[in-house]
Structure formats: C-alpha cells, structure tokens
Image 1: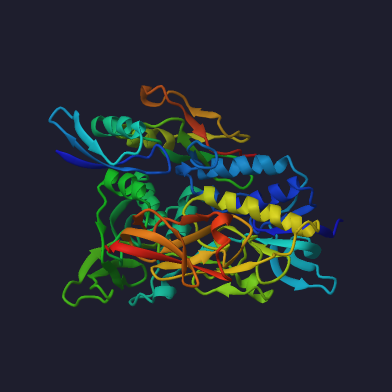
Image 2: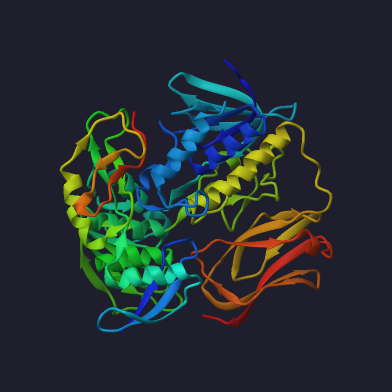
Length: 120
Length: 421
C-alpha cells in the first residue's frame, strides 16, 4: 500500500511517499531530506502520535476562564478523545506557572499534561 | 509620569514584544502600548502546538511562545501600557512623534523619536466576500470562534461548515472535533489548499473531515439562526457552476478567508501602504515612508509562522532604537525592489547596494518548478536552482551584497517557469 506522510519533526515539513507491506513495514520511502523523516514515517504508519492541546477550567483566574494545556510529548492519536474526556472533568486554581503538571502520566503513556502559560 | 521615549511600540503580540525587547537591549527608552488587558496578542488563543520550531528550536503552543516573550520582556525596562488603545499619531516640529491613546485613566500622549507599528491583523468577514442569503446568527470568523472556545469557554455552535482552507480554519476544524462538535466539511474556493500541508494532514485527515476544493458557499439559509448553507463548485475563473449546488445542513458557518493588516492608525499618520499587502511600504530597515516610523509583523505583511514575525520584529526594534539614538547612517545607494507575477509582492520595497538583502515574498499560485531570476536593468545578477513555490509559504530570497554591486538603481525578481501547475 502507498501512503503520503507529512513529517512534522522540523519546519521543512518533508512530504514522504512511502510504500508499506501488510505488516505495516516500510518497503520504500522517498521525499525525506533527513533520517528523522524515516523514523517519523515508521511511527506514523504503525501508531501515529501527536501532541494534544486543549484547555482546562480555571476557577479563579483574574482574566482567564480557561488554562491552555498540552501533552508534554506526542502521545498516540488513539488516546486523544480519552484525554479530552479527562480534561473536561477537571478544574484548576491560579496561580499556575507554565510547565506545571496538570495531569500526570496520562492514559499510562508516561507523558504528563502541562500548563501552556502562567495564570495569576 | 515619564512622557518622553526613544521608541514606542504599538501592539503587544509576538512582533511588538520582540521589537520592544531588542530596542531596550540597544539602550533605548521604550514604551509598549497594548489594546488588550494582557500581552501575547493572538498567540494566547492559538493553544495548538507548531510554534517556535525555528526560533526556539522546539515545538511550543501559542501561549507558551507568548509566555517566553513575556518573561523576556519582564526582564527589561520596557514600560508596558495595557488596556490602552492608540487613537492617533501626530508629528511634531522637532521631528518627533506624539502617540495618543486612551485607557481607564483617560487620554494620554507620549512623545517619541521612533515608533514601531506592530498591530497585527484582523479577519476578513462575510461582508468582504459578499456571501448572499439570510442575515442570521451563526456566521463567525474562525478566529473569533477560536477565542470563544479557547479563552472564553463559550460554544459557538454544534454543527459546522468551514469556508476557507487557511491555517486558522484547519486548526479550528480539529479543535471543534476534539471538543465534540461536528464539522461537515471545509470548502475552498481555490483549486488548492491554502494552509500548511501538516495542518491538512493533522487537522482534517486525522478526523476524517472532507476538504472540498474549487467549491464555495453561495448562500446562507435560515430564519433566525443558520439552518444550512448552499455550496457550489466553481470553474477555473472561480465562477459558480450552475447545477452543482448542494445544501449542507449546519447551524454555524466559520469563515477563514484571510486577514487584513490593521493599518488605520498608520494611514492617518501618513504612512504609505502597499496595495498588494495592505501593509506599509518599507525599506530594508523596515522604516516606512514616514521618517522614524517602522513596521513589522502581520501589520506589515501576513506571515505563516510566528518565528518569522519575531525575527523580523527583532531587526525592526534594533533599527528603530538606532534611529532614535542617532546611530543610523543615511542609505548610500537605494535600490528599488520589484517583482513580476506570479510573485505577489516583496518586503522590503527598497534595499541598499552595499548590504546583503533578505527579500520576503509570496507567490499568488502554486508553482511546480521554477528558477528565481533577479535582474537589474537588462542584466541578470542571480539565478537560483529550480524548485517549487506555494502560496501558503512566505519565502525569503537572500541576495548577497556582492551580487548587488552590478545592479543599477533597481532589481526585479521573477520566477522562470519550468512547468507550471
């Protein structure tokens, strides 16, 4: 099977044309300017991962009703709706510092959800 | 209260903050005036990742990118005026400028030697493209819906159609899907997508949202609220093809149809604008047609990446400080910079003979393979390698000073097509 993949490792955004077999092993890949593209493609065809960004309610922010958050690293796309559901239940209180852990080890991925900004 | 500055920066987004930080580093006395109640500008509502790969060498969200600049700014002596709306710029007889703004304390006027215009853009609205049909609730610009959802905890609708495949529209398609709202499809007038390829992939394909090219919204239907939109395919002249109409039930139409630099204050101050960008005409120092007034960021020309905005603004901030501190040398030999279609515009409009030039531009249509050719008079002074060009990507052509030695008083950028798309 043939697939077109956009490597998002760096701003070059190489577009790769990859061919995979029935076990999702890459047979050929073209279009990547560096080896990181191939590493990205290997992950992408098996279990795509993305950084998830969303918001969490703030109960006392001066100007801010919501705190923007994100997963510290990319997590499998298949967990994104589950994480959204968990974040929806949460409420946090200011003060908050950028980088504070809001939800640790989300879905047992070993990745934390962290605050994207300070809230006073 | 201090009423005299070297540099006043108007706007506290990524451009304004970067300009203020750099002007301060050069030893200028700097004030920054921001309309909003907090710094960060539009970055605060862009909660998605994808920022900073170039400038910070890591992937950040919009608020993180803003926070890093805010943290830098807090280390400086820059005086920040929040919730302050600039009304006008006046010119004084001593060559300085007077910036007048209002805030809760009333009207304030500050004198300054230099100004950096960094007000950013606003979104184009329904009126701009004259979509016929009912005048009903439920038609939003994508950025406004983004603010409602990401900052104000408001839900603008439940079933969406998005018009325009610009990055804001694509990002919103993903955001709405994640928040449990239904996106029926993204419709794009042009035969190609306007946003970055990564966003088509990660925002539409990940969520199974269809992208309909060469299709536009031709009617809004509803009584008090949007009930449906009519979409129609368009021909190569972008005219609707009769008989291809389709009714898409929805309760909300989001418009992601482009940005307009907010240059009302600039125009009133006599700053000449470039009709191709709606931004100021600037020289290689990012100085406008009015001495001492500089411009950078999205109010100058629309960028795709905040990283590029920051770098441009840093240069502009340093230049504004140099001007204010009397360190600027008069340009020796100015070169007019122009471009031929399909290059839509260039920033800057002039450069100098004895300096390396960085010329930013954008193409008006996708080019499969072309060579960048720079001519001066009838002499060719530069020819690049053949490559592709996309309207969604702002390009930068470097021209070393050595090549400009042979130039007359102008240079022209052209793309020589190998094979047009």
